[in-house]
Length: 279
Image 1 (tube, rainbow, N blue to C red):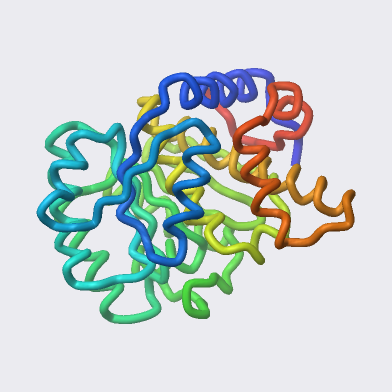
Image 2: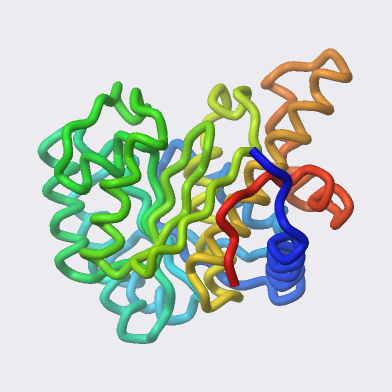
């Protein structure tokens, strides 16, 4: 894939600086496996995380935050109630909502929960792997638990259908990340490293970071591109440093956080690979 255009690099860098300078509060109702990872990723990027899943306060917290992120990874009935309440409150307050449909298609309960949440409120951004996006759109998909067995490009038709149905930006993550919207914009990003698939929470953290970027950038398509660019570059550069030092995936998480915090414009400009950018 070709190097990103100067316009794309400028836009992504401006959004990274906006998150660092504005420190948006991101309310995440996320899964038990990744709570700490997501919080640390948000903090490293410059945002402020809050994770309030109790029904009595979920809506209030959603109104206070700059963005709401819903991740259905570890479902529980009371959490679903809180998710719906928070989504309704965020929508009423004009706050962006990011939905991560973890494990969509794996069980009837997950599918029912997603149908309920999408019937309540259409999110600004939906981010998932290929199998999750295809299942959410009602297409046959190959998944193993929460892991995709489909390549990201296989989900483009499903992503377009979801974007039209919910007036949302849809991000299909994988070896190539695709970000598209109902107006026909579609960008492809090819940064990252295979080691990221051996570290829990990178995909869920990408969704959390999309929330942070949506809080400072009103164009959800651009915000999603910027968040995915930062997430993938942090993994790519972090894995490069780990290998150079003779380290493995156990060290990658710390190095990934280091790059989320300290990525420079020169590193972004020299490494970002993207096609399809448009103003």
